Image (cartoon, rainbow, N blue to C red):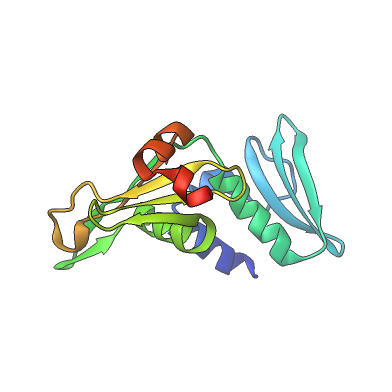
Length: 165
């Protein structure tokens, strides 16, 4: 994957460009992806040092890991919004990120059509996420919200015990 394609994906996912670089000069407080010989390197740089350094044989493995690190922060809720632009309504970058996460990364465990919600689990860390539509009175259910759900709340609300047995 080329740099332009990756930047486009990161923009769609709503990743702030100030969080990453492709510069090899150890910039302050940024995730870095660069090619080193025949390998690819991903790391976080701080105070002139590399942290969480990982080397990959393939560009694809490095890019997947780079995206995961950029999205893997302590967020507990993603609230999408709709924007009116030129007489039409479009999704903001958070809506697009929620769509990408629920279609490409998180594992869907349960859909509750009656309450317009769904339960997901992150395969990397086991965290439960709930997809809801708090403005369900709007056309199409309104913009989505993706929020962390404790294991206890997931069991209680979605009766997880039945799903895992």
